[in-house]
Image (cartoon, rainbow, N blue to C red; front, side):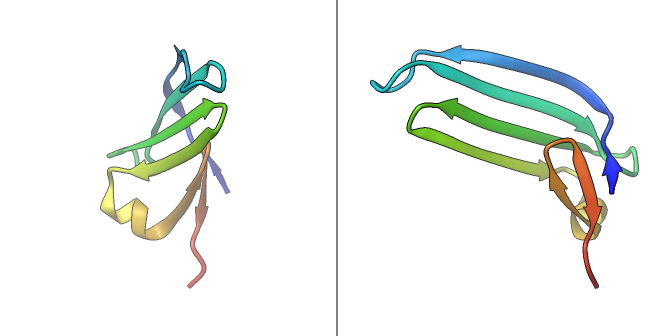
Length: 76
């Protein structure tokens, strides 16, 4: 397990879609190899609690599974 180095974190308030307000969370991390970036986005709004994470480096995307701030080597 590798803890990713945080580059930028921000949270933007959102009025919501009728069920109340919430935040949209965006976090940017350095890729494990240092050549790309890992992005984490979470809609923390009532009724719309989805999240997404992706890596811009194909080599690391193929090698690791990503969670918020963490990279884990994929099983072979």
